[in-house]
Image 1 (cartoon, helix red, strand yellow):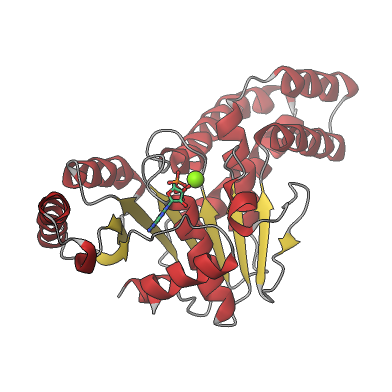
Image 2: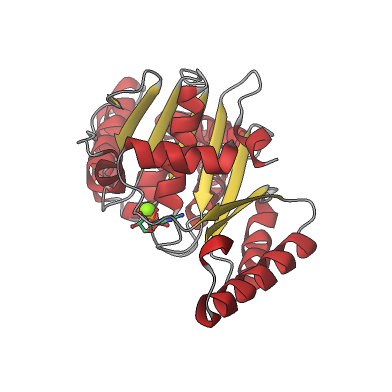
Length: 306
Ligand SMILES: Nc1ncnc2c1ncn2[C@@H]1O[C@H](COP(=O)(O)OP(=O)(O)O)[C@@H](O)[C@H]1O
Ligand SMILES: [Mg+2]
């Protein structure tokens, strides 16, 4: 059952939702975190969505500086991670690290200039900070990620791997120089960053991290799922859950138009179920309302997890 994937088992559970824009990721991330909080798990919902969907869903302003409690729920906190803010914080953090390491003045100056100019993609830096910080956090029972739009949203997951690769290469290159000159400052910095990354990677590829894909049961969802599975394979990550969202409720499909539409959806649901027997599959009906307000979020969560 899909429910078994999201329930924490002893250690912090990380839950990622991916899928195309508009399929229902933010709504389902909200429903999932609400369900877990109601079950007594200390839960954090991390949103990197520039549109700040979670503010609209819960009807509340969530900050980007710190986690905000959801009104009317004891165990749920939300944070809107702001990409620009995140970059600024990241740079300040790196500059602090540079200050804290040993090295000659000119070296520290060089490192600072290098980092101030260092062109890092905004999205990647944002995800880097979010990942490294929260993937090392043991404060919560569950952390649900509502990821930024763009691609299929799992793409940014590869960032710590790619970053680690770059770090390792620079460490190797610089070690040769160190042997000649005895300069250790930069290497210490790179090694610290490498360790942070490694821990993030361990969390990302551990059993307690789950990747759930949200799909409409229409338009070749099977190909999309296979493509995403392939792109995650090099990282040892597999999709363990699928939510088929916005299924037309059978009781209302009484005329020819809706009957045909429903039949189409049923065809795709059957294909997804037979193609991916190893994946837990959940189904959600199309509601007559938008998923706005705690009551609707709870309703969605009951429909999905019971
Ligand atoms: N099962 C559903 N029934 C009715 N409306 C839904 C359902 N799931 C999502 N929605 C609505 O669809 C729109 C897009 O959902 P959203 O969660 O923002 O998608 P995403 O985060 O993938 O872009 C929102 O208006 C949301 O309220
Ligand atoms: Mg969204």
